[in-house]
Length: 96
Ligand SMILES: [Zn+2]
Image (cartoon, rainbow, N blue to C red; front, side, top):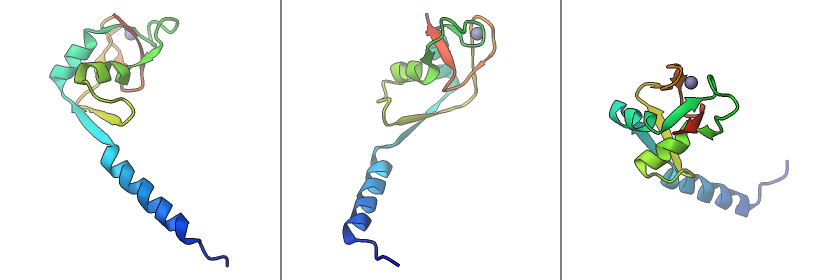
């Protein structure tokens, strides 16, 4: 068996610490969801042509979070104002 070089261990240790430090989880409560819903015109379910932006992009705007390090947990699914179907973080929407 070939020994793992020292630098490999070091590298792994650094990247896992950075991950822990930088990753940010934000809970989206119902009030924030309603605020985000106001910025939505339609969703991929009722407007597959026009919906191009993932819903979490709207959440970035509403919460002022950095999209590259932020994950969202929704207290409940948002509702499309147009078709009333559920919208989750990765559902594509059309902004209002
Ligand atoms: Zn819709």
